[in-house]
Length: 386
Image (cartoon, rainbow, N blue to C red):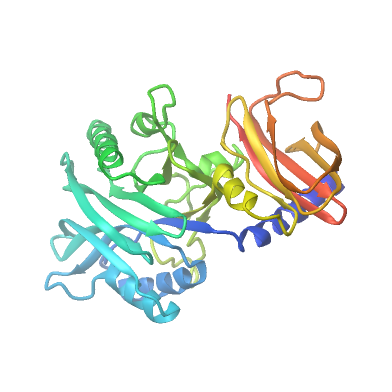
């Protein structure tokens, strides 16, 4: 058993290094904690910027962005300017003022920071709770295609208010999707609610037409909580990256970030961040590859993922060779052999219907598809939802 798990870990690390060379889109959400008095905000934003340089996100939804009342020292602009200087490319900011915070000593915004050009921008003022709130929208031209990107910060006092705000956001997203087509709609923010609460379930309820996928939950094991707050001892997950299921992207990974203190128990914010990495879906990859002979073996992320009951697994074979495709559960036990044969060169696809080798339905949960061919070995994570 230990050997099987070691093989999986090694394969997943290999997968990550290979995926880095593919076209990806790195999306992040982060609550900055503003310029809260007594928290040394100048030092916190300095270390937040250092972390962001390492993470190199493509688009960031930021909440609790503060500046002085005279408009100086805006935190989002400081991040964008620092990343622009560090990476040598322009970063763009779009900010929506909400209220004056910390006893009316600072202006507060919700914002979007992006390294890719913004075609159109807009916002919607949400039902007011303890403070005014907004949801921002950017139509962003990324290397994978244009995306409708939304960012928000919901009320922290009232569940009823958050439900109304979510309903407004769902309508706003639908309006932009219908009038400004994109390959995907992404929604980030501090939602001030946990995953299984009524406001969040309004987004993720798959029984009411197009819904939003909680990207962290979609790609991580059920027991991996992904808590984001409070930074010193996280016990709740209220920071999310949602992906509308009508898009054309596949979730490659999603993890908690900005989770290291810069000294002792001092963190850049009272929140940890979340980063989700997307890649092209299988159909687009296949269309690209079919134009030329594949040059190497490659196992792509299954699509859709998560899935129920069927998903498609695609891969490339650069020359005729024996190929095996096997599905394992999280304990390393063999569940299903999808292929064990010589295969000719080309782009290949095969479906898995959530059944084992005895053609019995397997339980919902995390599974792994492993491809082996000669010296090539690669593994991808699958999530079956029931």
